[in-house]
Image 1 (tube, rainbow, N blue to C red):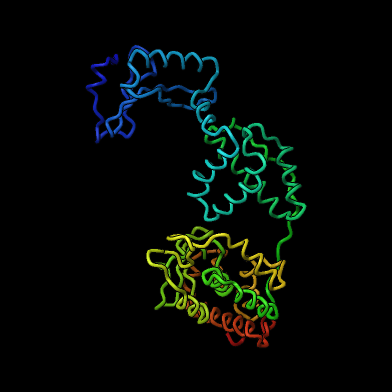
Image 2 (cartoon, rainbow, N blue to C red):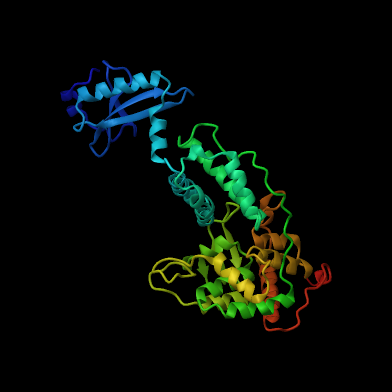
Length: 397
């Protein structure tokens, strides 16, 4: 129908109709007025860009713009589109004119909804990308820029340098999808990364006592217990950080992790030592987190930074928090526990039907956890604790 002011005023959003409701004008093709459930009415146009993608662009609200003004704006935009312009993409780029703005959009729209490690991504991007190029336009970055950043970081931390490049590459893929940069533009592609060796670092029994002493020196009980429980439960760093009291079953002595790295939930049996550490941990009224921050209602932060101080005090500068998982796996394997039990504890996937986990006796994993916990705490007290050779204890299990 031909739109008129009177007809537009008489249009109402149909609650039983589709979510997008547009009345198109017969006078100017692909120009119309969109109706919203709130009662707002806005002038819109639709078109296809040079890549064949359909776009919808809002020109302005009915009432702020007259019908005559909106038609003229529509004709002006259609002229630009015929010249090869894409006004929607131009607007999206304008919304992220700087690298810093692109980083913020990436963290908010991509990392937070999808990644448990979003805080690591955010910190990494601010430290290495925003501080270096924050005021530049995203499309001004070159592969040479990314390569130089990669080399600079790699002088001290080659694995971290590789992770930074991977994060930047993912961010620019996101920026393409959002129309922040041109399709195909990604300066982090084909950057030659450093070769990485698989880590095999795990804590030996004689290293537990100095670690225990360094942990005892941590004045924040939540931070201190967080490191201990990582060591005793072999959970992933970020999964433990997200622990809430609603996920702790003290009666069953279990910690439930509803959102893990491999996309499944995971129930962690608590050894006697881990259970006691949770029981003795104070709770803050109104704070759902197990490991509470000094900021009301929040959890602890900066666990990596504090860990660097702890490991330096313990003389274990080469140990990272993920090595705790390798420690549990190594101690249990050398004590003769099966690979399946260890994978179950670590929440690793298994080859073949996953239902094999369902047939496993839960007491077998709990026995392994308790055995491991006893050995760790004995080593922390300075008692001689052997991690026996693989197969030596297998006949007892």
